[in-house]
Structure formats: C-alpha cells, structure tokens
Length: 185
Image 1 (tube, rainbow, N blue to C red):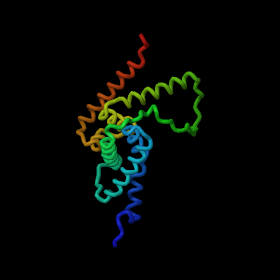
Image 2 (image 1 turned 180 degrees about the vertical axis):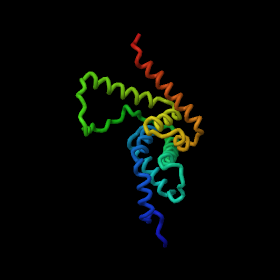
Image 3 (image 1 turned 90 degrees about the vertical axis):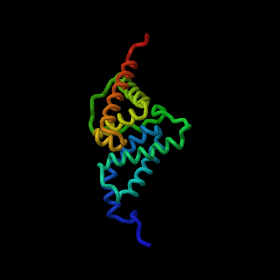
Image 4 (image 1 turned 60 degrees about the horizontal axis):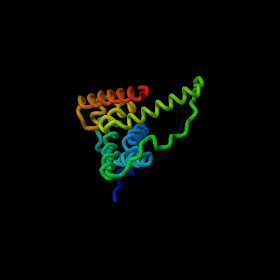
C-alpha cells in the first residue's frame, strides 16, 4: 500500500510553515463565531485537518483567507447542527490569565483600570451583538487585519459587499457605543 499524503514529511513541513503562523487568527475568528472556547478549539482543529487534506490542491488565494473560508464552513456546519441550542456570550466566558508585559508602562489608577475594563467589555458585547455577516466582516477586518479582497475571498462575497458590511458594522457599533455613553434620563 503506498504511503498517504499525510505521511509525506516535505508536504507536512510546507503546510506547517504556511498555515501555522495563522493559527491564532483562525482561533480568534472561531471564538467570535462560535462564542465558546472549546467549540472554537474543535473548529480550528477541524479547519486545519481539512486544510491539510486539501493542501495538495491549494493554489491560492493567500493562505490566511483560505483558512478563514474553511473555518467559516466548519462553523456554519456547527451552527446548522445545533440550531436550537443556547449559545453563551463572550461575557460569560472566563478571561485568560493576565500576562506580565515585556515592557513596563506607568501604573494606571484603579479608577482608570476599571473604566478601561468596562469599555473593553462593552466593545466585546457590542461586537457580539452585531448581526452575523456584519460581525464576521468586522472581526476579519479590524481584529485579523485582512484586506477587503482577502475578506471577500474568505466569505465568498464581492468586495463591494464586504465594504458595505464593514461600513454598516462600524455605523451600528458607533450608534450602539453612543447610546451606551448617554447618561441615564
């Protein structure tokens, strides 16, 4: 029996060199789409398995949008599978342990730290509340720094649609942020 493509060390090395640098970005998108750390890890693993399986046929676009496109398919299949299941929000998930930065910044006052944490939680909540195509486009652009073309390739939409979704997502976030900042009447 001839060896499978998974046994080819050169192929495996090329895949690892090209795909693994984007592991954190793929996980970030999965976490936003699935809203669960464990499900996101499973989706990323499935994404990378599918990518490795089809790596011989890969000719472009760039690796990162290709991985995002595979991840989207994995996540949408998961959504379809559990359409009626309750999904926890990111606010309900435990925060990763704080890491000490390599540099030292001035110590913030406790009040400033509380305000910064509150603003970060508000932004996460507002992004999470966006409708799916707007949230996905916003995360791909603003968190994963993909170009409009790369997003279009990843989501299978025209560049104009990507630009429209991003503009609408930003407008919705701006409006929601302003509503959050208004003093109670």
